[in-house]
Amino acid sequence: MRTVLRLLGTRYGIALVLVVVVLVVVGVGRTVLDDRGGRSANDALGPTVAPVPTSADPFSSLGDDGVNEPVAAPSLSKGAADVSTVADRFAKAWLRKPGITGEQWRAELKPDASAELMVELADTDPADVPTATITGAVQLQGGGQATVAKFPAEGGTIVLELQVFDGRWQVTSLDWEVA
Image 1 (spheres, rainbow, N blue to C red):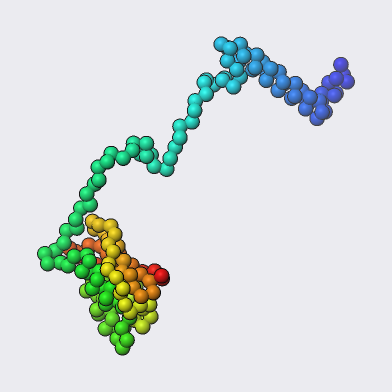
Image 2: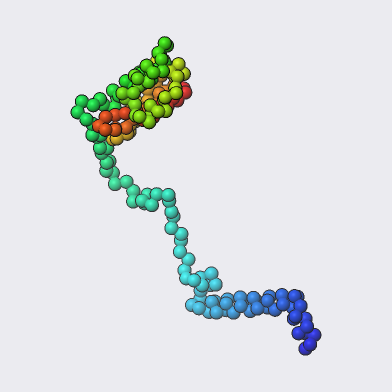
């Protein structure tokens, strides 16, 4: 008996005791769970439920109701120019014109540009404008309080973002897309 106790006191003995305890617990668990209504050990916590598919949009399962929400027309001041007029006037003023100074160029842009855009253009040299010619009609995208105007031009596309501020359209962003 003393040798058995001495053997159990070593790490091998303790490991053996732990293996036996785990086997007993697993055996008893399977026996008890297998006898409960003929269910298998995998059904111990209840029947298996198929996972519910998820998506990034929680309302995607609702479908389209077929109603197109109208885009609210912006509230413009009396006599304010429409979006295409403002975009056209700004795009033509932005074009490269030989012999024009930076101050003259910015003065032409200022009536149709937001204050933030004018700050961004403060150090721009009009000689660096990549095009001198608009080659097609403006294409307007969006509506409501914000619109994007695209002008095909020699060498690329002028892209203007316009928003309504204080009852009039203003260009808030200017980009050049190389063709």
